[in-house]
Image (cartoon, rainbow, N blue to C red; front, side, top):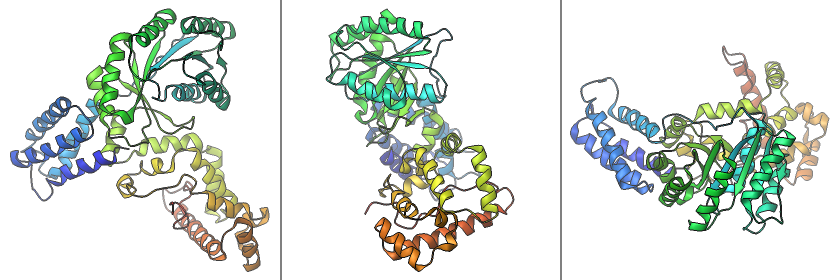
Length: 451
């Protein structure tokens, strides 16, 4: 995500390395590289020019102040502040009316991830905001669109309203709202039809649906991999339906960053959500400051901690803390930690939230099934062996190796590194302020990469 942009911006800051202060000359050179980086990321030249002009003005205004701060660090701070402002300044929450049901209208081109997002939003509202959403299938044109939404609804345990024989999306949406009122649903999420390109018929239909259902929130879904084209499409849609916010999907793909950086400036509407992957829990509220930090290679510790807090039960943490202090952390505990870490999301994406890791992982292909090898070893143990690692003699290790299809050397390596991790955790638990269990960090070398 934004790897190329991050690398190019880092190069722009290197121009200032070795200088004692900001001058007109080194500022101009750095600004030129920043502008090139933005244009290469598919940001409109006018936006890139205005952005770098603001950065330049701020940098020139600090020529004779903050002499204790290195020029490169000062430029990073200025660029970060401007990136945050460019992307909206503050996060914008979803509008949910107090009166039931609140209607959320989803619009976008075909292939943008609109239907998948509808499912993710329903899951988000259900799991994180404790709402009772109803999904509504109003895409009456795309083959299997209703089936796709039905599968997603079943997957997340949310009801769906559909009329397979009805080809009038306006009528379906109106009937769904009446159904929601009768059955007490909090939120109605209307998934509308998309087209391969913007056309008059499409715009008229989405406009008619919005007029008929009067949604409290209208969201436009954008494929972030389409760059400046996405921004142009977003502008066209906004002129017709005046939506409330934007959703960026496929942010885990080969994203240059143009859409994320340009939409707020061009359309004047905030980015409200970002979506990665196909799993239903991979939807996040968009925070401009956190995204700016990630673009600049600073990681996103706040989001990482929030994801961890969602998955790690407080009582379980206390239980593990006691086991670590007593040095009785076992393979079953390790397995439970792996499962919790996996539920937090894409492994490489999580690692990229750690400051400095995004650059280190740029050319590393981390397999999301990285823990499967470790799990296969643990699953090949008996309950007694999992609870008591000291039982693992040579004959038991040979049996485990056969059970999981690994070599004896791999089993020995895993057990050795598990013991090293356990000792380290036990030692750290006795240090002041270090009174919580660590996530599984003792993965055998090579187990987290594709070969």
